[in-house]
Length: 576
Image 1 (cartoon, rainbow, N blue to C red):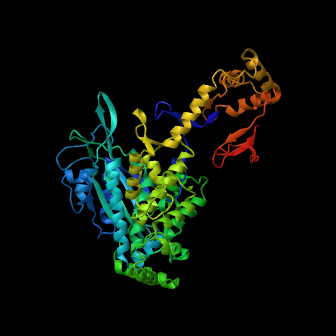
Image 2: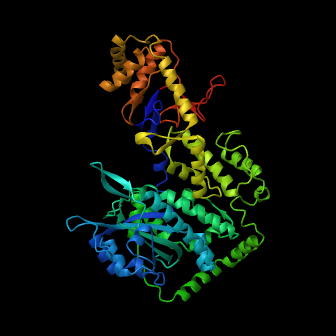
Image 3: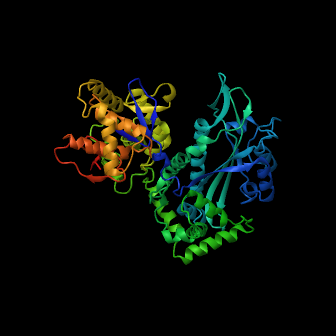
């Protein structure tokens, strides 16, 4: 067994060994356009100058004065509307109780800006069409997400038993501002949640906020916001569609050309990006800054709204028609049957029929122990959560022996089912109580695994133990190294390093039936396997390679009918 590009993770249980990809699902898609952006607000001195000169968060869209949220804000006596001077002082670390976070000798990060943006179609319906219920629904979803973030992601560094550790605090000081335009004065409903760099530890002392988890879980925060928003707008009678990454979706009935017409800001960024060499996240951020104009004050908001309506009319689009259809659907009580689509609404009152439909959609096998046998007396959201969590666990389990709660939440929300994070959390807790999921121990106490994973690894380890010393060496250990080097030099023109030679000698000269080697990406595993495979064939042995996912440079073929596919969707390849 050869493991590549992995780091060894500690055991969850005494017999459980796990491997985790360093560049797994968490790293994928981060450069994709998301409706939640995260940015550090500048240092104390820079922030003071920035807010004094532009005062973006407290001046732009002047009728949005902002409000304080969070247990940290409440503990500091910060309630209600945000006062600009007080806001600036808190960002500098100067707290209302007279204490200070930071010092003159060290730069103080002012805070973290989480910017939640509604997809363009919803901004059009809310701001051009005038359906303020959409804004209220999104605002409620954002506040719910911030409460979750405060409870689960707020941390600081404290000395615990003589060592500095990151500890949860459960409190944040958040200034929330609602804006409804972009810098080109187009409809763009979004919320700035400016989280001050302060939090109170268990000892009552105010310290700097450790914001690592806010950055780490930004896609999860977006997905949970959109999941709650979806349930709300569907209850209003709207239909959702065009699902994208991280839970994003558009409103059915708002054409793409209308969305694009109100998205010149995005077009500017893409046009500038097209002239740049890079295409990654850094290049996108640079293109954003290079095309960024000052956000001017809106002198006549009524005139601006009329301008939006005129643009919509010129495009032949009337948002009032979409709103009217949603109201009609809601009046017929269809809006309460959330998220199952027009083809499924006829069966949503039958929980078992809904479950069957979801299982088929997600590829869950019949009798999966993660799905209860009886699903009566459960809401649509609960049935959807059950299937989303089951599919998330199965999906993650194909790649990892263990995973975090957050990984389950993110994967479950990614299936775009009509459910919320609260229902998903509740389902994960149920599976833990029932023993279908098990917690790790010690350093891995934050990890979860399944009965199946533990059982599989028990069988693997038992097989390893049973095979110790039971197989004759393919090549004598005394000559395996020299033979390997000779073949490698003659056939491939390469001299193996000590680690490669040692690995090859182990594979060829071991008396164990199962041998495992592990190496990081670029360590030369493929290089040593080439002469090893050649020697195995010279000794009359068949060589079969299995890989998931496919590795570069491997000629893949489907296994024959006589070769069992013991790994789901496994590929086989002829050894190089």
